Amino acid sequence: MFERYSEAARRAIFFARRETLQRNSDAIEPCDLLRGLVTEPYPNSALLQHLHENRAQLPESLRPGEMPCKPPQGRDVPLSDSSRKILLIAAKEANSDGNITIDRDHLLRAVMRQEVAIEASLREMGVSLRLVRKESTHRSQHSKVILWQIKKKSRPVLLIVLLVMVAAALWYLHQQN
Image (tube, rainbow, N blue to C red; front, side, top):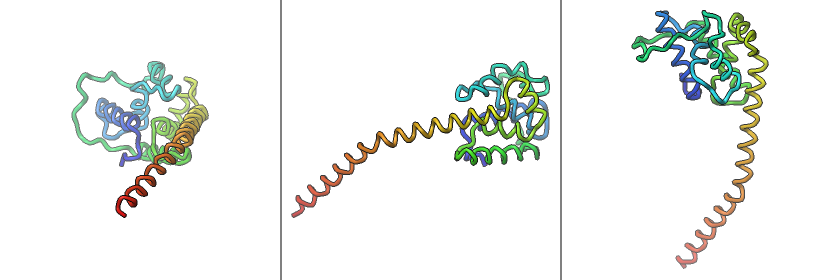
């Protein structure tokens, strides 16, 4: 189910599960997903990093709990209906960006789209859906430019490798005769 998710997004969902177990809840709720998203630092996104650093400013109901030394053992914890919708929205967000991988910023955008109260709380902290999208788009375009530059630089190398292979094949045919 989570094959498309980046390691960071998987960890966020793991932390959401942990939050759910600490609350003794029966399902992972959107507030748990947000808590999971802000639990760890995330240097790839200035906005997620800002939320991580300022998580104490989140409303009490959205703030991550203190993590015990040993994670709660446990049972499988299903996603609530609204959390399932969030995962579907995150996939749509990734698709609209042209990404195969679903990352933490896609999850954040999905939480903000699905949960108006969470979106309002984050907006008060200076994080809007528009800003998250803008940052994601900028990072995605930057990645594409880097890939294009790598491909462009590797063309001469590929040509040399191809010429060496042709020369080796001709030499082998010559040796056979």
